[in-house]
Image (cartoon, rainbow, N blue to C red; front, side):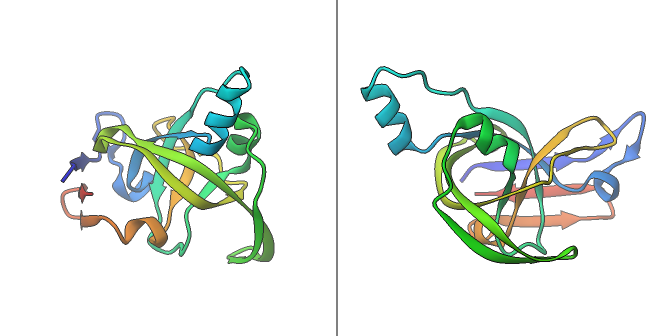
Length: 155
């Protein structure tokens, strides 16, 4: 069981768990079927896109910044109605592979990731490109210790 302990403290900002949230390094790449198709045709395979994922227990589904799918050249496969604090909308759905290097999780196929505008930088200048929703969190054990600004995450 891959385990990762996140201690959110920095010299400059102190305890950052309340400011930045739980951040996990993430790499997003094209789905295996697309990789095999491109490889079979002798076409270049786009490199994975890296950044950070924010654990969002309030989100029912995992979302990725739209620019990541654009950079990878992944085509949408569906659209769904979504509801956010900004209101209701129709959002595109994409397939991708996800790696969480800190947890030794690689090539995790994600068939239904929501594309949206969510990219931003934290107070420690980490670029957030993904929100990890409950559809993915259901497979993890997470202990959130706010008192010590510490998070335990196991796969």
